Image 1 (cartoon, rainbow, N blue to C red):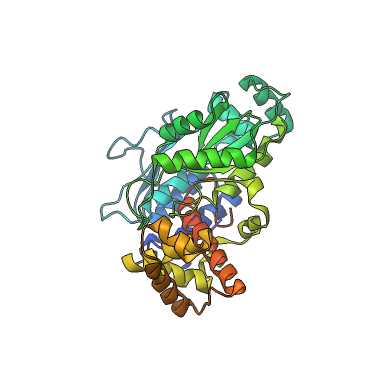
Image 2 (cartoon, rainbow, N blue to C red):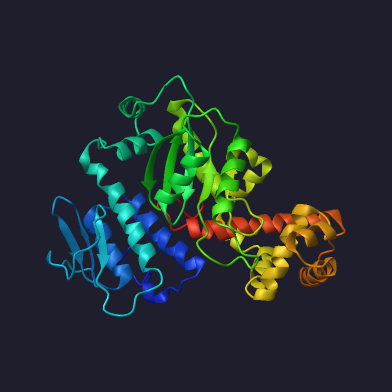
Length: 385
């Protein structure tokens, strides 16, 4: 557990809104979780981090509040917090910090994990039963019982999907339309929705169907900007119902490769990754610090640079200037000029197979880092997933 009495106490005033600051907050709460901190210690540590009063309330009526200096406050709170269980809130008098929502998400998750340590058994609601089926931390006998209570067919294989979306209901409706008769159960786990299917579909077929449905409903503008990104889906392999935790882990790892860049994939199957799955072994910090990926990200921050990066993506997918120009509805000389500028900046010669491979790999790393940075704030993901 972080030593809150030392000068090394992490404080929000010393953090920005970049990815590294996000990871420091995530690591802070991960450390509290590993130390088996109780609810009081979690809320107190969150208040010290936030530098303002922090509170939590359970449906039972229990309220815990600590002040910015780690002092225990009474059970009064200025306004009714959200109805989530447990409800958590900040009482910040100054302007909101960009990482406030991440802090609250991680605190709520930590409190949910801490509660079962003293609760003595899983809850019996359907969402909780599905959490038990998907968890590799539960006893096998508890998972067997949960499988029976959910009415799952033990003679059929199951597969887990991990959905990251701004609207879980809309995403589940889309999945249900793309997988008729296959949807079994779903549960929100942090900022990700877990879906359990009992189906006989091929990995690549399911991924292609879901990608096409999502792309049709949520098209991406050429600039990579626009409306809501639509859901991302990671697809685990089909396994015995009692091996569902392994499929859920695969689904979460595959989700890192989903992307809303113009030529990225919205739905990715773990089985289709092959050797690319090795990228999931690398910590996100390591990927963020890759010089080539950092340069590509910097180029993509301007409108013209974003067009150049999108053109490179298309060229790596379609393989020729003319086909890329047709897909992007521009003249092939425009494609050539954009690629030539990128080659000069990156020190590549795309006619060379090794440099072309490097470009393809860097674009994949970029997609993984963009998606993973957003996913890192989820309660089911950490710095290394």
